[in-house]
Image 1 (tube, helix red, strand yellow):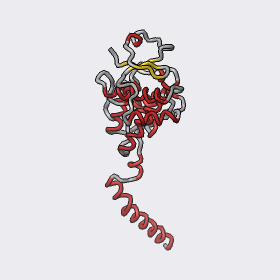
Image 2 (cartoon, rainbow, N blue to C red):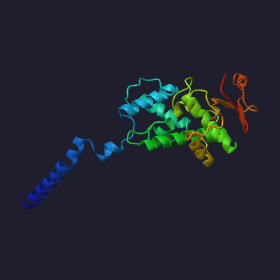
Image 3 (tube, helix red, strand yellow):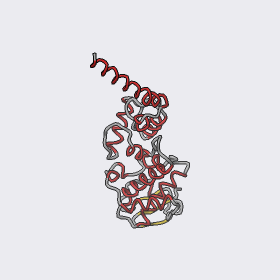
Image 4 (cartoon, rainbow, N blue to C red):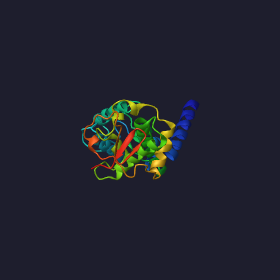
Length: 231
C-alpha cells in the first residue's frame, strides 16, 4: 500500500510538471525542437519551397515546387551537396542553405550578408586564385554586375550556379578551400568597388576555348583576365 501511494504521488508530480511546462510550450509552438529544426525529409513550408525553386532553376530538381520535402527533394539536395563539396546527408543545414544563397527562417539580415560574402568569396577564389588582388575584386564585381543585369539571374547564387556560367564549377576549383584574400575581395566588391567599370564578362585569352566570348569587345585587362561589357 505504501509503495502504491509512493508511485501515485510520483506520477501526479510528473503529470503536474508536464501540464505546467510542456503542454503550454507545445500549444504556443515555442519548443526547442521546432525552433532548431532544419529543412529535411518530411519538412514543409516556405523554406522548402525556396530550396526546390533554387534546385529546379539549376537543373538539380524536376519535381513539383510544393513546399514538401519528399524523396525527390532530398535526392536533389544530396546531388547538390556532392557537386559542391558539402556533406551529402540530404539535410538543408546552414552550410547547404548558404551555398544555395538561402537564409534560414530564423536568421537575420546579417546572415544574409554572410551568405553573400561566402558565395562570392568561393567563386572569386575558384576563378581568380593567383590573380592580383584587384583582379579578384574584379571577378566579384562581374558577378554583382550580372545580378543587376536583366540578362542574368537576380541573385548571387543564381548567377554563380547558372548552367555553363563558370568553368570552376565543373573543373573542381569551386570545391577547393577558399583563399583568405577572396573573403576580403568579396567584401570590397559588395561595398561597391568595381575595377571593371561595369563589365559582365571576363576570360583568360590564353586558356579560353569559347569562340563566342572572344568576339566581345575588350573594355579592360586586369592580371590574366580581360573584361567586357558585352556587345
